[in-house]
Amino acid sequence: AYPPINVNYNIFCPAYYPGATLIHQVGVHFVEGQITYFGPESGGIVAVGDIARVVLRKIGHKNVWVIEHPAQPALVIPTNAQGADRLFDAFILLPNWNVEFTLSRLEDNQSHEDVIWQSNQYLDQTRYIH
Image 1 (cartoon, one colour):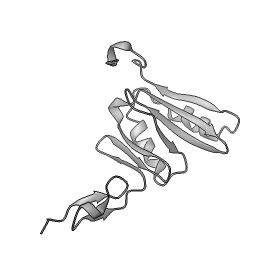
Image 2 (cartoon, helix red, strand yellow):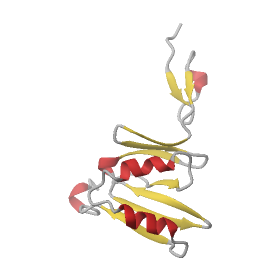
Image 3 (cartoon, helix red, strand yellow):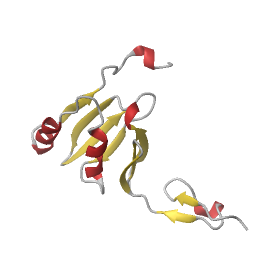
């Protein structure tokens, strides 16, 4: 018999893991410096130290966080996603994060895209292999 293992159902098919215990991880999680988001349409993982830029973008009638990091597709998280308030625990770790500016942009219904934070090394060619 196989020992029980934990499998995230969004990533693995439990049929291949006899005795697997499913972990329901839908929504935003912030653990040990890592943001994890799994939603109905997208998902991903990014370490806070790898974040290059945070953008607040309006898509239709919804706001989303667009978290850019080198050599990976951006992580897109709706501002109303389950656990999205945990993102502030992560964002406050970014150097010179401006909470007041972030809150003002969240309340602004006119803007379509705002760069909320950007690393000093954003698009620095020495950080990329290709």
